[in-house]
Length: 387
Image: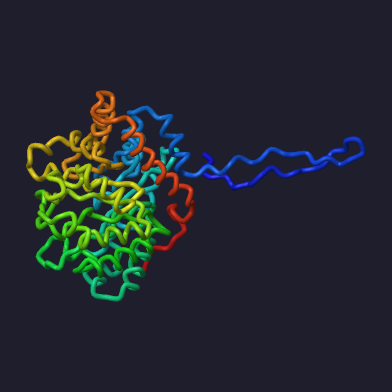
């Protein structure tokens, strides 16, 4: 597939011909205009059925490091992405490259292969011994850039192309579940380090800022409940918004929405809130891929309104999400069921077809951008393991 042609400018004479004793320039046809990832994504998505579009905006997971099983899973589901968890990571970088190669083996356009490689407490790659947030928040900003550049290199060498790795939540409360993972105890210092981390990662992998709009103001662990706060939108803009704004301005490819509620803005968790999606697009100016945090976490709350993973996925897409992710409480069939449910919602008129198409185009654009980036994104079979 031709992803991007070289610009050629206007037609130029290639040779001359004689006419009445005069040399007359002969015009040769112009080369095709460059085709960028966005235009190519729109073309590809337009050719998809709603079912294919729905599959392309689901990020799935199965807990195995068997390349054959992973290749079969991706080949039969045609999902847009896969998240690597601990069970997918073998004991060596070389073995992990076989895993990621299998995930991409059946796709015309490589899928998004994501990993939670924050470093420190949340680290899927056991050979990552670079400084993590708990130390970096006390050190000069340049050390954050160095650590995340090195970390992104490990992710790319393993064959993954997306890192769900940059925490923009801000808290000075050491008892908070997010404290050790946060890049700063106050919004200003966190913002500096978030920007440095994103800038360092983006040349190597698609960097993700999370968990919008921020856990710092909302106490509680979203793996167990829906943390909530009555913080006003005006107060959020002055404080918790700053690290997310910095990450977006630094060029983050993805923005992960958290399962937390700012009740003065919307009673719904942000991941299912159209208002928060509007804020991300219109106020922060984010134009990349919005991805949910693990939708299985909503089920873990025990709240009956979040018991159905398909309903959660449809609600997230309707609110403005581009990529839905589920790990906890999932089976090998869950991602496919979510995709089917999204397509059925379009058929039934409960999810606008143009909303699904928009989401599919954003995800496909990112996939094409990563593919077009070439060797900078590809697994490196000749790389030596990181020291």
